[in-house]
Length: 563
Ligand SMILES: [Zn+2]
Image 1 (cartoon, protein in one colour):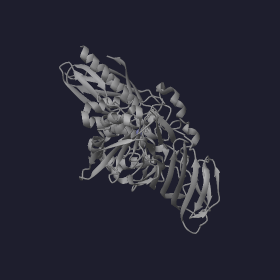
Image 2: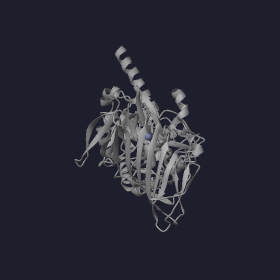
Image 3: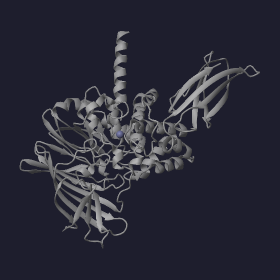
C-alpha cells in the first residue's frame, strides 16, 4: 500500500540518519562517510601527536582559573590563566605545561614572581622559583589568535551573520588556548571568566556564578565543583537566546537543563531538545544519578557540521542537527550519556577511548530498548556495523575516533550482557560507575569490576574483544539431520571460525530450531574451538534453524551446506 510504502521510506530515511549520525564526540568522518567532503581538512592525523605518550606526570593540577576576553571581529583573545597544582614526585626546577607557542606572552609568574620560560614542541618550560614547596601557582598572561586545530579547538565562525565562538579540545587541543596539563588523567577544578560584547551570552562548564557589566561588555563567571579533564573544558559564546527545562532527580532535587541557540533556531530547538529530561531520567535509572546534579546539564548551538561534543555539563551541538523532526535524538542521548562515561568516569589515557565511545553508543541501544522495547534493542545493535579489522579496540593504532571504536565498543558491552545476564550486567555497570565517578579508569579497571561483580574470569573475553582481537567473528556452518535409531531426530551443526583477526573466539551461541509441527526452542552452546560440531536432539521433524536469532553476537554467519 502507498501509505505504508511512504512510512517505510520515512523509516528507512530515519534509520539511515540515525545510523549515519550515531556517534560523540559524534561526527561523520572516517569509515565510508565521504559525504562531508571538504570538511575533511578539519581532521587531524592524530597518530602524529603521539596520543598515547605519558607526559610530564610529575605535576597534578588542582585548579585552572581562566580569565579570557574575546574579540570576535579581530578573531583574537586576551587571556590570563592561573594553573594551581602540586609537584607529585621530586621537587623539580621546572614546571612543564602544554601550551601552543603562537601567542604574545605578556607575563609568566610563578608564585607571583616573574619567572624565566622557554617554549619547545608546544610545551612551556617554566623555571620554578620555589623548589622547597611541592605546591605551585603559575600565572600566564597572553594574547593573540589561537590556533584552530583538531575538530575546531578554538573557532570563530559565522551563522546567518551571527558571529559564534566555540571550542572543541578533544583529544589534546585545550593547550591551543590555555596552558594546561593536557591529558585526561589530570582532572582539576575550574573557574572560567569570559568577557565579550554585551549582546553575546557566554557559556561554559559548571554553574554560572555571576554576570558583570563592563561598559559595552559583559563578563560571565562560571565555576565547577566537580573535577574536569582539559578536553572537556569549553567556551561557547554567541548572541544566543536561552530557554530551560527542569530535571528532577530520584531524590527529588531539581536541576536546570539549559539551552543556548540563535534566534533562528529557537523554535526548532524547543522541539529538538525537549527530551533531555527523559534522557537524564533513563540514564540515571540505568547507571546511577546524573553526576553533575549540583550544576546543570546544558546544550549550546555551535557551527560544527560534523556532530556534537560532550563538554562537561554543556554539550556543543552542530547547527545542522537541530530540527523539529528529532532526527538526532540518538546523538543527543549519546552526548548526555557521556556525562557518566567520559566526563565523570574519565579514561586514564586515549588508549581507553572505547570506554567513552563504546559506552555512549551502547547507551543509545539501552535508551531505545527502554523507550520502545526489546525489538528496538536488537534493531539498534544491528545498525552498529563493524568493518574495521585492522585495529584493536584498546589502543587503536590509526584512529581513536573510527566508527569501529563506537560500534564495536557497544557490541562488547552487549556481549558482556549476554555472558552475565541482565541482573549482573547492570550491577557491573553501576559498580563501575560508583567506584570511578569523578575520577579516571582504564580498561583493566573495568575488567576487574566485571570479575569482582560476577566472580568470573574475563581474561579471554577481554583478550579476544578488546586487547588482541581485530574485527569480528566469521562463521561458516552447515547442518545435517540423521535418524538416531529412536523416534527422535538428531541435528548436527558444524561450525568453523574463518576470521583472520583472532584465532579462536569463545562465546555463547544461541541456535533457534523450529520443527514442521511448529515447535521451536533455543539451544545455547558455548563455543570454545575454531571448529565445532554440535549434535542436538530435536523433538520432531526439523524445518528451520537460525544462528544468533536475538542478535547477541558480533559475528557474520554464512551457511555453506545443508542436508
Ligand atoms: Zn561520543
